Length: 322
Image 1 (cartoon, rainbow, N blue to C red):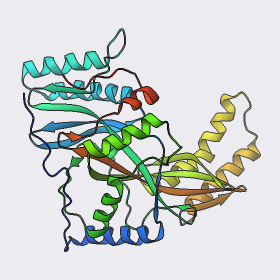
Image 2 (image 1 turned 30 degrees about the vertical axis):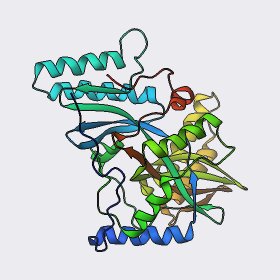
Image 3 (image 1 turned 90 degrees about the horizontal axis):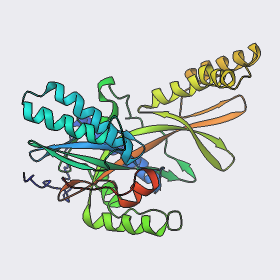
């Protein structure tokens, strides 16, 4: 079956009069671009899968740390989808693909694209970055909100490069089109593939952000925990003190003393009561950092894993077509 190309993959629909919430979000972005003037890669890419039906692409799920994990997630999605499918032939095909990607015995088939009935499934690659200025990474924005419970892993999120954009979103997307790894920080092969991706997938779609809690140690920033919303990230940092540290010592066979547990619980209460993106407890400093996410798109839809992704993060020797 032939699937239609992605309309508007290299198009930015700049709109002067956005609806009020979108206009406020765009002004907020403009303020941040002026303050945090540089783009900084924010770790390894995420992986997930997307589904095409007609001209429309939607995210099925994201959050895998490598292409192999995304294939297992796709297998789970196909098995769940088969329970809601009415056509027996499609059900058999969905289950057969799931069994190839998540077999009971043997290794997974490293194949990143499948066509089943009127749908196309593809493992996708999501890049992460943050804005930085004066050696400080961007904190949460005033317009950042907590995601709904049903919105975890961006399930069913529409990939629409033609969606109305304000001037600052358009500017950021243009800046990201040619964004490359910092020279000297990645192998030459990775840099070559990044340059190739700019040609094959010249469009950029911004996705909802995540939030990482980092510990500030002098001039270094060490990631500790995180979440999909800024309040969730704060809550996870509090739980790091009140729950994770005691369990960690217990697991190591050295249970914490009651005085230590009391200190950690007090620190957790302080964190939950503090306002702002930065916290100082027990002679340690932490900061919530906004991690933005982008998806490259091209004529044939969203970008899949690159060859170096398979070698660095997952199984080698992937195929791309059914």
